[in-house]
Amino acid sequence: MKIFLTGGSGYIGKATIGALVAHGHTVEALARGDRAAEVVSSLGATPVRGGLGDLGVLNAAAARAEAVVHLAQAQTGAEDLAAATAMQDGIGTGTYVHTGGTWVYGDTNGIADETAPWNPPGLVAWRKPVEDAVLRRARQGGRPVVVQPGLLYGGENRLIDVFYTAPGKEAGFIPFIGDGSNRWPLVHVADVAALYAAALKAEAGSVYVGVGGVNPTARDVSLAVAASVGLTGKAASITLEQARENMGPVADAFALDQQFTPARAEAELGWKPRFTDPLGVLSRGE
Image (cartoon, rainbow, N blue to C red; front, side, top):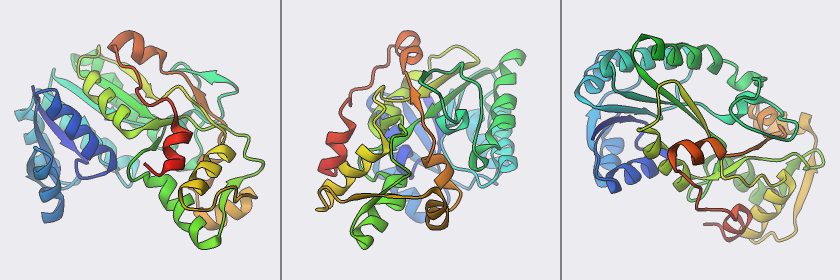
């Protein structure tokens, strides 16, 4: 299958290109600059020069493809919707896989799935109208699918590295917010990449949370990260107010108490997370 992908030089994108190529797909990947083009080329994809604001480029690339996987992070809801619209117009009746995230559900009060009500923190509140518009295409003959990854780990550990590992090494301890009993729906980046590949066969209008099914506490995650950087046992509480000062709006997302099950994707797509020991992987810095 010929696939057009955005965000190919990013954290999830690199893993997803690898998964798609391994499944025998041909991939074209959006590349804003020379460095991004080199990265996607090295992974076996053909670069398409442009950015998310280049709607004509997005539309034309989608029209050449049999499926689209949209991974690039937009700066605003308006930018994301414009890009999604251009690509959905281009792909027509082909599969369009859009990226969301589990943070939109807020606190889950136990183990939840894709039917949970939305209660997003301000950081991701813009996603609701975008995903609604994307999914409405199913009523017009399109094949939209939404994948909502949990908090990713493995490899670069993008958010965890930026907001926990790096500042923690400087401070001498890895923080957690409050008492750290809130749970995070972790998922390995390689498992999410495999889910995107599996989602190409999903039915129109499907929504899947991309989670590993293991939901450790934030405190346990911080202790694992501490072990990975030679600070074994050195995790400490900070208040939500301190977290907001240090991290910005993302602090409210990290403070969420979320548990999710991957049962729908397992049942409908035959996808199953391979990485079931996130604390072990994090403690080893893998």
